[in-house]
Length: 115
Image (cartoon, rainbow, N blue to C red):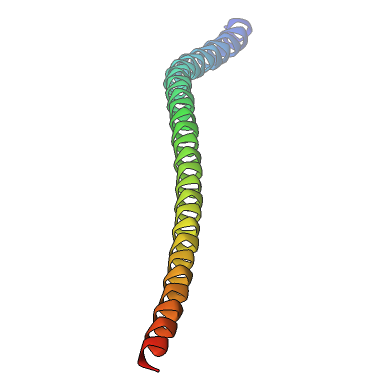
């Protein structure tokens, strides 16, 4: 009896250890499946964020180009206005000078008539 009880006890302990290992294996397997699912979701989220980032970068470049174009048009408009204003000022100065000359002539003629 004693001869059989030792191997039986040993076998029962081994069976208990194997059951525990099986239980741990099942838990690990389930944990792995959950982790794989979370990883899959995280990868999808990363792809979505990368796509969104690409779209936003393209929009940013478009807006940046529009801003640069508007600034160039603004500078060009200011330059045109400055040139036109300068030309008008020059024409007005010439007219004023001509009118001043004309006034001097008229004053001289008037002074001649009065004397």
